[in-house]
Length: 193
Length: 156
Image 1 (cartoon, rainbow over the protein chains, first blue to last red):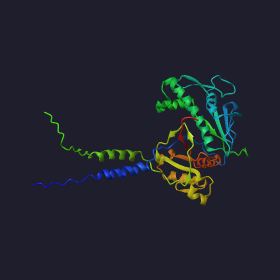
Image 2: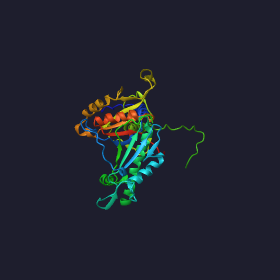
Image 3: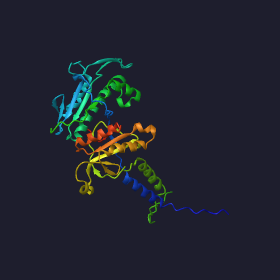
Image 4: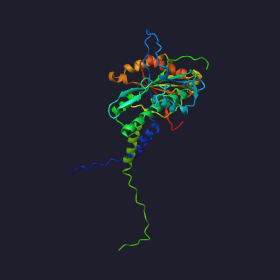
């Protein structure tokens, strides 16, 4: 006669898994690591002299943040809310104004065709030693937002979808039209204010 | 024909709980997979700044963290309330950042080394002087891909 195998009592299984469940519930931190991705410029070799790169004045948008977290854009006191539109106007230069960056014409291939774009524009962010991190990040954020919006508008115009839905190659092509050029000046001490 | 039994005492049937472990296991696996344990014990306290244009840090194995903030209550006596930098599990001077990056990078696979990202987790009230110093150190160590850790917000 075959021996009957006694059934294992599994009633405690639920308790064990509850225990594990509660452990993972407690240790879980759902927040994903998010951040504002930036790229630093490569270091200047010590034997190389710091050259003043000659950037045409019209190609440069200077954003300064002082120790009281106030903003100065092209020598004018501005609110952080105005920065994005200001930056977009600067990058686009729709009316070919002489105080905005020089426009270049280039063929970007189908479906873009020949586009006029500000190839040599640079946005320079300068901050004080005592500027708050949040204020600095706000400025960076607005500038990145300006680029993102321009790229999104471009994607909508030519592909009728949002920029994020495009594949990587197409995104790269749009990036060529609106290259992110946020330069961070070599740290300087501007003195007390 | 249906009989109406009125006098018999009705007993509640025992609930079958045999599927309970399965349900719990399902939950367990969910939490196990979404869990990310704290990387280190924080010796500095910081509140993330907020921003809107955030990108997720994709591969965790390629990310190294630099924490910046004021020492937590238990270390305040010893280290004061000045802003400090924490690398891994210990307080560090800004001059140690370069070595830290180079060490971490050499421990990586060769093909991953160029993809290393440094996430700066700094308190929102940190002065930019400290951040600029860190950025300069990172540049010198050729850790050029950085990410300013921040939390999402919807408007200004």
